[in-house]
Length: 326
Length: 308
Image (tube, rainbow over all chains, first blue to last red; front, top):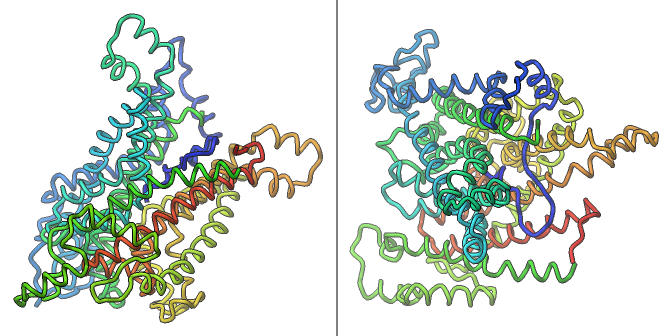
């Protein structure tokens, strides 16, 4: 799952950056076609934004994401149907009415007579919450630990790196299954905590290596010579210059966390019933799939669309921020 | 070389102890008492509960339980399930199945993934490249269980090409569909990775040299370019074993393959702690060893890398 970035397996002295896809020719034409920077050089972030604006995939994912965030925040605005109460007598496994846009029967009804459209809309919040929540927690703690390891070095680095190695040895999905199995009441924050518990190492590794590079720069020496304290150097000089790879990894893994949540809920180890989650709905649909594929199709489609939006955004951000591809 | 391997093996020991300790703690600190749960809703005889608890060593302090477990492990004893069967026996039945499944998946991953990636990389910026990019994005967006049901619905239920459920878990032909589903996600990553390194290395100096020497295109691409581009791909395949393991739990469940994933899933449901710890321990060991193997493979792929 989010293991794309887990490229360093230690030991070997090879630079094995796992970064994918950015048609180099496209990059060249994009920067050539843009307004020639007159004198004033753009910053890394300005450059990245310039890159992003010229990518159709970025705009596709951005529009999708705004829509998904709106659905997650205000599901009631998108449907007036009730997602929890089913009507078994009238709506048992009713087929979808594909022309009834935004109506309760648009996507049909499931095996408990509940509107699938309403369930798909109301399920968005849990997925987005888990994805964003895990990413935030992991970026904060992983980033902080990685920063400490990279900047201070010595025994602090040794201790943190060994802990990272240990957690890195645990398979992500398998480990979260074992952790979540320990909880009987699995609310959104429990799932976030379990996924973050196993997911923080990637960010810590990435942050550590970029901090090690950034702290050797001349401006850090200059800042220290001017008498800046450790905190100021770390947060004003090192961090802004070491942040880009972390942001890239964080955006890409967001989609993977959503996918992991759905997988765990599907297995009955993630979110549980009063919470509406696409994973649970897909799991409920698996016996009906043969004659009523619509019961699975719509939640699965919505889930894939959401993961697609986040992964594509991460891709675009990576291409824009990775100076190696320029 | 020998010294390097020895050093790496030594470094593995603390990591191995740490990971097993975490898993052991997570499994045994769980709320809920597996022994008490054997009686279900009925009232349990306290004396019987106490004697069973003693038999499985659950009345010992946790650190003692962990040390006992590790000592037994080094003797090759994975302990017993609450049903009384040795865990090693259960795993001995399940592991060959999962190994086969993983082998099928890995083969598909390597052949299709590298093939697609090489194709896209050689045609960087053209329609084929964009097509592969979009295809991989779609595959990555689909969680493995969605892919699994989709594949089962299309190939088994609608087209009837393959049986929907695996009856004989050791039959390679029946493992084809689950293997394919398991491979898809990593295949997409392998394709993208191969594509990037191919496109990057196409502009390398040695490529121009090879072309100037008048080597046939097949040799330039097949030997010079491929070998140089494989290093990141091999790294990825090595670290991907962990993801494959997680995916196996889902895939084996969907297609009813009697492998380790299924064993683990059942053990989780029954709070069969010894089995959970045993399975995860083996996986951790496999992952650590494969990472070492990958690092050694670098030297084969790139002779400039030497281990002292």
